[in-house]
Structures are given as structure tokens and as C-alpha cells.
Amino acid sequence: MPLDQLASRVNANPKGRFIYLARQVNPDMADYIKKLKLPGIHLREESRRYYPSGEVTAHLIGFTNVDSQGIEGVEKSFDKWLTGQPGERIVRKDRYGRVIEDISSTDSQAAHNLALSIDERLQALVYRELNNAVAFNKAESGSAVLVDVNTGEVLAMASSPSYNPNNFAGTAKDAMRNRSITDVFEPGSTVKPMVVMTALQRGIVNESTVLNTIPYRINGHEIKDVARYSELTLTGVLQKSSNVGVSKLALAMPSSALVETYSRFGLGKATNLGVGRRTQWLISSKTTVV
Image 1 (cartoon, one colour):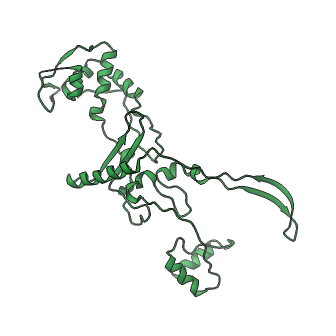
Image 2: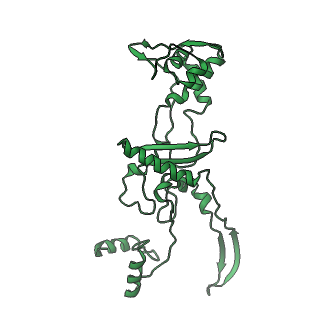
Image 3: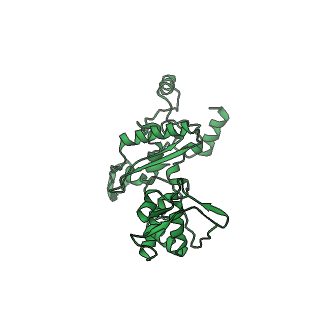
């Protein structure tokens, strides 16, 4: 550390009992400093988080700062839960430093354990396959979420590129973003069952309805499917993920009906997953068909 920088630190805190010159230095450097026996220079041991899964769970677990405060991911969302609270005791002492009166005290609160629904084996598998897919397709990034359809539990959540939470100095901020919860994507075909459900609820169709699914144009845009089907039942519309069939059902009802259904399914609302910052998708109450 340059002498002028050291002097600046000392002068900035003239009444302080001590100042940190450096924190979390490597063991070799600490041993070297200890051997120098410099007057006024002392070493202090500190704990530091270590993340054994590294890049695999980096976006989920997050990391802490030098004071062990959560900065990203679960570390941030559950910082108080994982940290606990220190106790406090206020006493009165005589001039010899002896306690002569207990004024008040607050018991400490132990830190809590936190169990996630993440399956470590599946997480590693999803992360590996996601990286392979990103590389194979020469994509800039990718994200994947594995959910138990019976319980709704998230079993794996991965983003690529990732970073090493044990040594992230110099890591680009873009790599530290959990794309699964921060990036906004159109839901696409995942809303098709909701459209069919709403059409059934409103009596627009019934279980035996057969739809004409020949490609058509609307406002200059062609609506078509991957394969050509002349007609499909409602079950067939979902099985084939028919754009034509679902679009005809959607156009047969007011957009407000679909917005209401989407909202009831939680679209546009906070997920409260507890894994850090997330972006909320806003559903417009006014929808224009183009």
C-alpha cells in the first residue's frame, strides 16, 4: 500500500481504535507480515464463506461481502435468518473497571439452518447440459429451471455464463446475473392451456369442439403451425401446440378475460422464490391485436 494512501486512511479516522490495512489476505502473506513484527501492526483471524459447488450454484446461493453480509442470491434474501443476532449487555462499572450494576441485557439469537428444494445432483446435471447447449448453439447466454410438476418445487435453476463465488474479482456483472429470474421472456406456448381453459369456462367451446386449423392471415400477419393440420380437437390443439387453434380461441373473447386468467395463474406477480433480485413481468390491461 502506498504511504500516502496509508496516511490518508489513518487521518480519515483519527479517533478510531484501529483501521484495517487489508482484509482476507492469503495465508502466505499473513505469515510474512507476522514475521516482520512491525510495531502497531496486528493480525486478526476472520472466517470466510467457501462455496464447494462453485459456478454450479453461484446464481442461487450468491455470496457475501468481507463482513459476511449477503450480497446476492439466497445469501442476501435470508441474510438475517442465516446470521442470527448478537446479544447485548449494558452494565455500570466503577473506576477500577469492575461491574457494579447490570442495567439491561438482550439474549443472542442463534443463526438458523436453511434447506432448499434444490437437488444438488440435478442442479449439476442441468448446469452441465445448459453450458453444452449454449456452446453448441453459439448462444450468448442461457437459463434453465427444473420444476417438480406435482409439488411446484424448484429442483434446479441454472444460468450461463456463471461465475466462481469463491473468487469473483474481475468477473463481468453480466455473468453474475441470474437470468432465470431477472430476464423477461414472453411466455409463449406455456399460456396455451390457459387460453383453452378460459374458452371452456366462457362457453365459447366444449370438449367435443373441432377447430379449423388451416393457416390464415390477420392484419397482414400469417398465423400458422409448424405442421399443417386441417382441423384439430381441443385436445389436439394442446397436443400439437397449435398457434392457429389457440389464436382463434383467443380472438373469440375479450382480451380482459385472458388478462384475468393470466393474473390468476400468477403471471405478472412476484414469485417470492427468495433467491435474490428478480424482474416482474407487467401485464397490460389494454391489449392490441396486431
